[in-house]
Length: 86
Image (cartoon, rainbow, N blue to C red; front, top):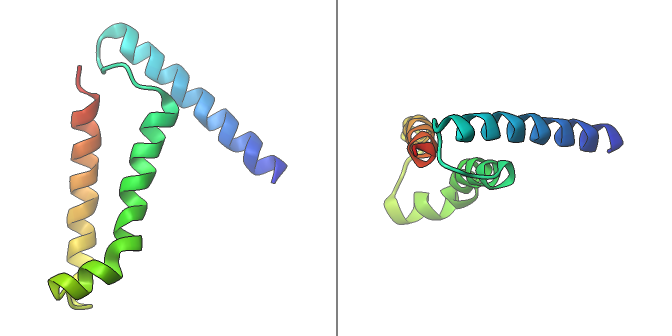
């Protein structure tokens, strides 16, 4: 646990430093490392948590799920990148 906490702390510190540099340059809008990471993690976890419900409501078959996950991967990446634009 200690190692995991140290690693996470170092990672967030590095991300925070890089964000501050890019914000200062005007390349991205102001956002904190925890907010950015929460956005990324929540969007990625949601599809797996919600899949049983959405599969039932939208009649998504097992065969369709890989394509859906691939589309979500692309959509999430684009959404995050657009959200960082100044």
